Image (cartoon, rainbow, N blue to C red):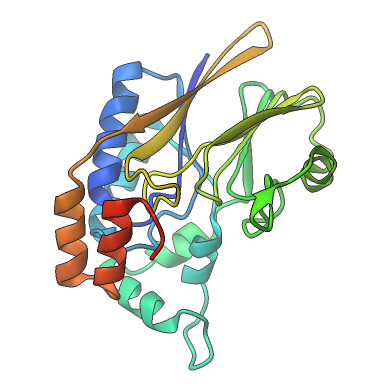
Length: 238
């Protein structure tokens, strides 16, 4: 079985278009979206409609990310990131925020062998594989996973840093991100899982896309667009 896993699109239509083309070329049996669908500034409306199209066409399984939860909150004077959220609500169709905020925190597939989440199985906010600015130890990862039964592979997003390790009998993967990279490479990321007879292989994919088009859109239209464009171009937070 082949499973394509992507996430942290962060409202970047151009990056997602490139990732989707690359995924389609690999002809997976299942697609998974790890959340944080809209919170970003490179045409979030286009990114929303493309994700909805991919779900309709390929049956993409979805989980919610932490920024998806933010989009389901009522906006008040004390809401964190209120200005960015207000701008996003103006960009995407009415109800899009409530939709992504209502998704489950995790999804199981491949007859229970694979578990996908944004952060941990029960939280979109907790980092599974990070402990501050370092990688979390195996004991902490086990505690954050909780009881996952006979799951063989757990794949998450959230940190936007690719990673794979074996924790006991479980292969734990961070898929990286479609957009808003942090490691100095601006390329879009996704992961191909290939399983047979209970053995799973993990392939990290990095995909070039029209970064300048995305950055230009951000500079011209996005809230804090100059900052967004700089991260898109450099693959680093500014």
